[in-house]
Length: 246
Image (tube, rainbow, N blue to C red):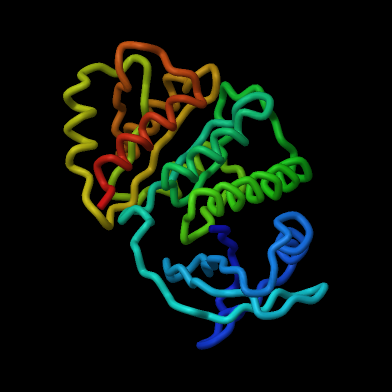
């Protein structure tokens, strides 16, 4: 069943209105007809609104609300992925898969070893595109929220952002003791805010890792093999999903 996101005010006790680009997608790409059923979420309350199409025009799809489903598909903790800006289009893949794995938000981070440098104009364009990828992935994976892709932060800004987070992890190639990683992941609890810091292709500089440790971030190992930047985040998110999934 196809799923779409709407603003909360577009859902009433009996009807749901779908507007914007999704109107063209429903009518001309999916070629849905009056009477067909679809799923809607408002990105806020975690509910699925199941409804059927009753009317279509050029600007709006009007649906009859049939029932509301509260199935708890979201992880019980807010997990933030702080991703060092990677080269080429790797960020698109990272965002897509992170959303599928249940991430709450993705934060691009400009670290010392990032090859990619974005000025304000390019950064805004990238964020707009990345947010669209997050929304598409949320629809595909039946999420009840669209994870936010936040503005690019410096490493210092990212450290300040997570100062009150309960769990802060930084996979680091020089870290050892897999049992420590397992213990930390195994003790995650619902309701905790979790931050994961992933370096770019060149990894983090030692000074950045030291700064992270001073700010309460735990260095962990992901195993004996060196993982690519686009693989490391998926690995941690998968472990966290396994631990927290209810």
